[in-house]
Image (cartoon, rainbow, N blue to C red; front, side, top):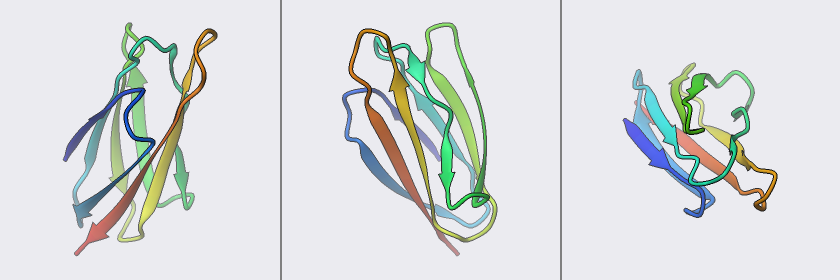
Length: 94
């Protein structure tokens, strides 16, 4: 599954993945400095690999570790704009 999100969009989103699926995320910089590293709750419920491009957009692949529901959270970084936070809650369907 692929998902794109940017600053100014809703702060919390939810998705449901089938067992064995991975999630590809693109978080657009949208004029902000970039995004903070992802936090996974509960710890270890998913592995996240990510990298940023020259424009500050973050591209990530999220691989669930099993069938435990989890949430990813991050926030924007900027010296000139108020910080925004974002959370994605993921459930796994067998």
